Length: 268
Image (cartoon, rainbow, N blue to C red; front, side, top):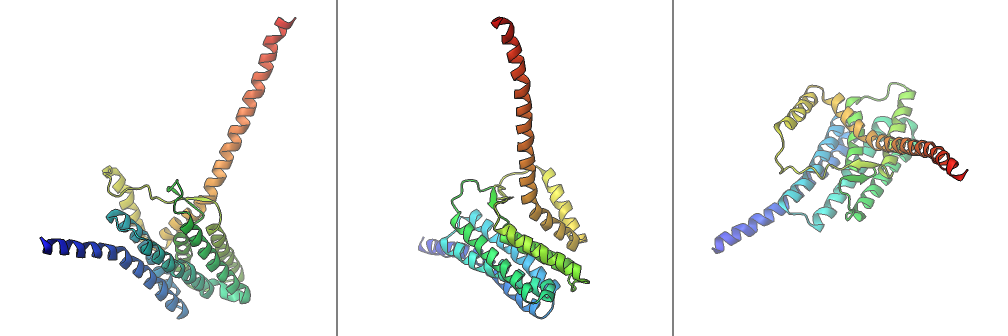
């Protein structure tokens, strides 16, 4: 019995190590991405940031599925994220697209780092938010993944000045979206342990086939779609509220004359 209990305790400690290993892999990818970006290998450096984002998503889910979440894991994950999704994409964007702007270029890259750090700090103090379905602001892993997918799709230097300006505006917009209040789906309500209809597997399989067949374009489209989903959702909600407000005002204005006409004969 003692041997069995000891093995269980060792197994439990091993389970706690499992999400930490994924976080360590995330940190390794972010650091090695810095090394490759400094060497000018932008394509592989970008790919490592995408891998880091995948590992970051897995470590949290594995910790929740196995019941091994801990304060140490949360803090370690945040420190790893500032490297992989703050410093690494900022340095990659500077080496890849912002260096022609010289001082302005590294200031924009530093702005990205600051916004990523602020986004992670805000996430840490909002862990008790009731609605877990949404993030407030663009998550730093998805922001980094979008920058990385753009660099992976077009790894060469910008062909013209206008292209550099567009890329600089894109990097700045992504940085600002991280500290915005736009809502982004977190997909934390998706329970992998629930039974699902086999028909849901078909779209996922089709998406995987597209990623394998055309990885650069599909990954850029997916991450870009997620980035614009926050402002697009806000604009859609604002338009719906204005439409309902206008409709309610119109219905109210139509009812008021009818009520006055009905009261008129009785007064006379």
